[in-house]
Length: 617
Image 1 (spheres, rainbow, N blue to C red):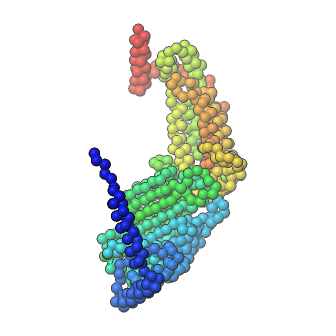
Image 2: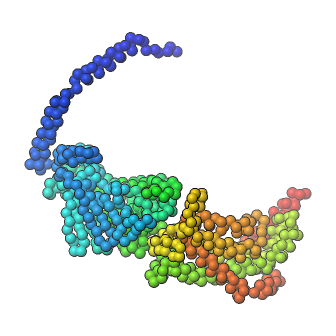
């Protein structure tokens, strides 16, 4: 194949052409005087256009606006003014009641500060949900000639008024007194909910009704808790479909979802939430969540970054949408007041029956106890009552363990007799259980019955707003860890501090497992080593709960102490092992009818034994 080459004449030709172009561009560039004259002429043309359009009451389609540079105001007058919108006026307007403070900026007409008036962060700083540009809200709409306007660059005129006891703020971006885009905020006394209405008037010549207006809402979650990783675990974007189904984006990694219909969307920041809701459902939305926390940090200020794009339909060339802003605590007792919206579904109670127990049993029950008891005492009282309610299950569990303990010598004897034949040993052991009327699984059933309670409480303590910043003994916040010592280094999966309640809970779990597992449960072939689990479980709990809510560790500590006490009472004053032994011996004498499962298991084991013998032949 012939190789293509660039000859020297071609190179010289390209160089000459390039040089001529540079020389021509240099000779034809305008002088400073010419540039100044051109600028003055352009300003005169634009001023005449504004005057003519004002006289004729015509509105041109708005153009894309960027006012981020130092000449924002001047550029706004010469650019936005040409499309009829009023000149900029810097400043903010304040709305507040007893529970929340809001500051709304003239630029963009959006909330630039949202502060809780009755709550503080872990470092005694007021709780801010919006501050220093961490959040933005704007409308992005297309004009009839496909040019785009973003409302975050428009300047709105504020007007304060009263509607009974409610404060009303009207923010209008005007093209004339009767032509405007309005954001209307109405705040009630002692209420976290703000009525929010978007509407346009006289802009049917501007807005392209064939394309929806894009509502864009972004928030970077501000850190409020002592442990940012723990807070981030419960910081999540949650949304309610129009059919009532609750969905969530990932809590641990970046996630996004599109084409979803929703009634409300919540940017939950553990104990506080920013929620946008509507009575007339949003038809669809694009949602995203970005995780900003990779490891525990004492200096990082943000948890996750949320973003949503929600189309708003334009009818008759005008825009009209009634919505609600909620800036407040993620508290079931507060959110439940807003009937018809279902905002309390944004709280992670847990799924299925676990969430039902948490929501309708533990949350109101603890709220009742804490209304007249200190937080820590309320936890102890609730723990005592829960354990007493579960004591029949504890009795069944211990009765099963007592029966297994009585049979232990016979099981050991079978183990020695058939030590070289594991299949035969298992078969004879099952026969012994059947004759004695003992089921090795009977001790597991009570434990399974307690699982819903266990999981519901596991979700209750980290998410219960009633525990937030409530102190008890050395714990200054029962919703966070109770550090008694700070380490000069960080241990993987443990942290850089030592919490005392998890240590106490682990010790109590260890003694409880010694009583229930270590001495009484015989080791069966193919079964896990229960003594190993007895030592492993408390160790794992110690690591797992070191960064968890100290209220949860307090509960497990008290719970296991009470359970140990109940079991000692059952052992020493209720159950008689001699009577249990006599009953088992009586059961052995009685013919025991096998159920279908037992018969099937016996037949399978016998077949396996026959096959094993046949293989030896």
